Length: 201
Image (cartoon, rainbow, N blue to C red; front, side):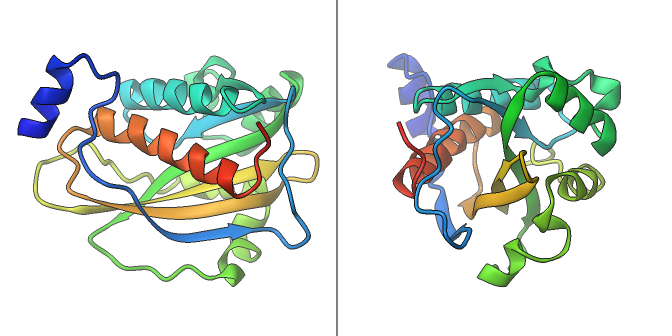
């Protein structure tokens, strides 16, 4: 709390509540670079907390845009009543000319799940719209309660020309004190890692 208060008093745009540990990263076979410069990429954060979703998608979009693509928060494209419907979402993205999706989704708390290369190319992960339907069907409310907890977030970058994943990662964070600040910092950390792994600036 002392660290968070000092950050706010110093006018920091992001108060870092906890470190984000990358426990797994993956890139599709044959992909040496991820070039979406000048192409539209939608930033998606899967959560039922509308205020958190808006601020986190804005933060994620800013980080993506700083590295070349034209980024837009998904809430600006998809009406709220349609957001959990994969076919409706697909139509809105297609009509908006979206070429890629970066999706952040909190998946578990205080539970260990192993991620290997096989995870990202099997099951519902392997197609953007299957993943969309599954992800919104099991939303983890990261802003609820203040018990000590470890939050696990999976992030995927989909190429919508094929609907298949290009890159993925899993992060874990221990007991973030402020959810809004945590999500903004996580967005920054993820896109920096994505750039390191091949996203062109």
